[in-house]
Image 1 (cartoon, rainbow, N blue to C red):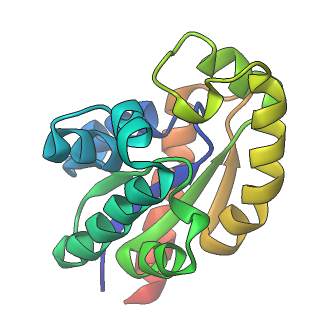
Image 2 (cartoon, rainbow, N blue to C red):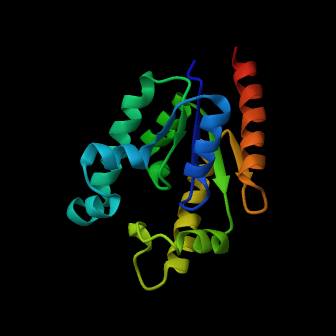
Length: 175
């Protein structure tokens, strides 16, 4: 059985930050799929989107998920769109315990407006893009996750504690 904790959710919901917190708490190594793809490709996600398109980036995500199947005992923070492909949703659940981090569109906009490395939000109406992408992705996040946590009014420590307790229960019930 894979004993990884996988964080999914829209950009700006705290996957990377909570992943680092969980990594320190659990002592599990952190794998951030976006960071790993950037390191492997030697260029930013925006550059990959610009030169090869979103589908090429999604191919890189799928290949990375396949390669992670041999890992156990990791925290895996994913990119927001990784759940777009059915194969990715299947792979994520095979990798371990999947936690969906949820935030309101207005909170996501506030959190992401300070970051210029969001290729899907580089347009004239990023708030509308957030709402549209959330509408499309929410059923996919829901279908993939074992647990959903609304992060808007919780501290990172509170979210991490909830994940730790639910993951212990999940892994305990699997043995």
